[in-house]
Length: 277
Image (cartoon, rainbow, N blue to C red; front, top):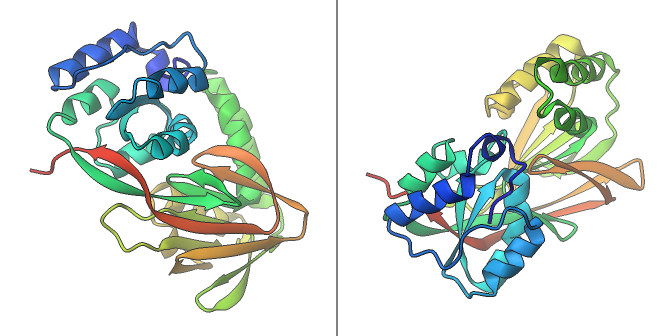
């Protein structure tokens, strides 16, 4: 299945045909081509009706998250073809960012169990972020396809967040004691790691400190930033002052009833992973 509106995929002429040819050359016997003119859910219906061993999904992290639950329930294996903006899940699996290169790298791939997690029953594959920082996702969506000018709302929103006084609106149990935080970041472990959620409770400290935290977050080193408490747990509850909390799940914004009950699903999803040399 293929999300034709995903960033990288949208820029590829005949993306479905090219990816199908690459997968065939990599040794896969494709039962059916992608049908990018259909909605994503309809494509999943058509794919699962064939009882396949593998379902290849070309799209961003949000597309993969949406397909994951149904693919896991079917017993099929997920084949990830990165086609979005960030492609965090593909990077964690060792796949190159280009979808055709990723398809080539899956020749002779092995099947690994990819842990999943869920927030109040809603699954995610990579990361959940609760708190004010999650609002930046809405502006990131505005940036897509808008060129250089599309960054203006995102940068303006980031600056407003940095200048806003800390709120400490979240309460969560981490490191065996409760913590107040502005932002809670919960990351799913890699297939080879210990089956524990990686939790980071972030307390903002002025504009400079917040920008430093954001830079560490982008580099995947948030735990090393100042005013961040990190721990590992199999489950977590996050309380908020409001009845509903803004939460991003794999980069997509959701409004979820509080409290947030987050738990790890360690045997969540079989996925193709490139063979390590």
